Length: 53
Image (tube, rainbow, N blue to C red; front, side, top):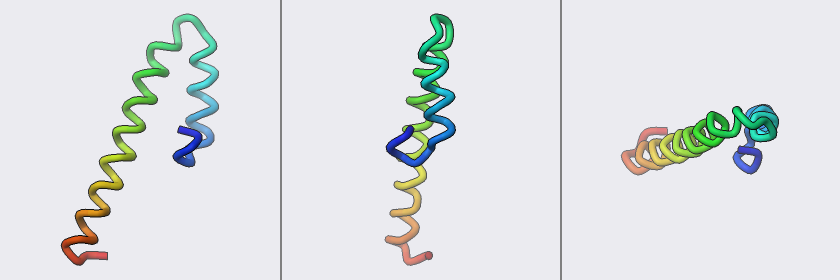
């Protein structure tokens, strides 16, 4: 998350990873966030390919 520019999300996720119970939701949240970013980029590329700004 930090490398994708989501600084606040990365800090919260890191704090959750430090707790015993919070690492599972943090891991799921991290994967979901990465998937969301990839889908957004893919959609932007498709719109550019079609010719929309």
